[in-house]
Image 1 (cartoon, rainbow, N blue to C red):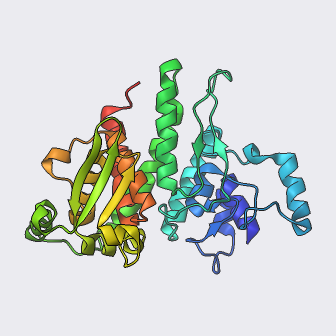
Image 2 (cartoon, rainbow, N blue to C red):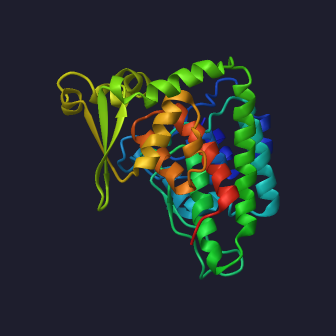
Image 3 (cartoon, helix red, strand yellow):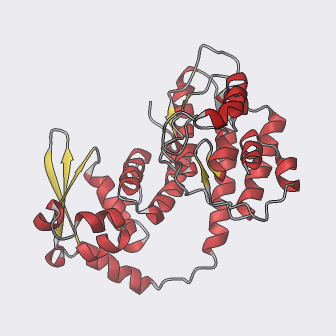
Length: 316
């Protein structure tokens, strides 16, 4: 099924629609292309096999093709011509309808670091974006972030508009899936908000190491953390330092970002005092959610970040 992955990464909408995909796993990952959504949006993302080593003789033909074409020859949703963008967006919509998941993490072998040149000035380029161990929504948001930062030196609005169209397709498809979920009573949410606020019943302290400010202490409940995150479940198990001390140290993350993450873990929403959290704070929270493998929180934060970027922009 390598040819189907190639077609996805090249934005070949007509080929994918006419291909036999009866045995294709739309939720699978590929060592060179990431998830289906990664492939459609960003093309080819790596050159190594699953073990991270160079490919062997059996892939010589593919290597030859790659040497001729290069990673950039696959293009992506930011580099493609207008018709190519139209095809990729249609292909993205089709892939989501088939069950492709934008929250699947790209493998470590998707180790490309990519920047984008300005449409009219090749001397202008964005900072790089990394794809390995990130989901497609995070990658789209990272791309929007670096393009927005580059707008201080030129008009990048065409690329921002392309990213926004892709994010809109992904978010609308995810919202349609959410409609099937049972609603939760406000009283239930209030109850869990009360649990989070009750430090007297907390049995875990999260130590947030903020630069120049010492350690900030945020209280939480081990039962909730263990249920929400397999990483935290392992950390808080018997015999682990965190489990024995009932303390979890967090670096490179603000206290506000930790509180955002905990609010979403407990209640799937933000209280009034956190409702206006900046995009930077939300991105910090998403990074921590990735680290703790709390994927449902990653999904919520992805859409919150998209909204924050649209409403407040990125401060230069």
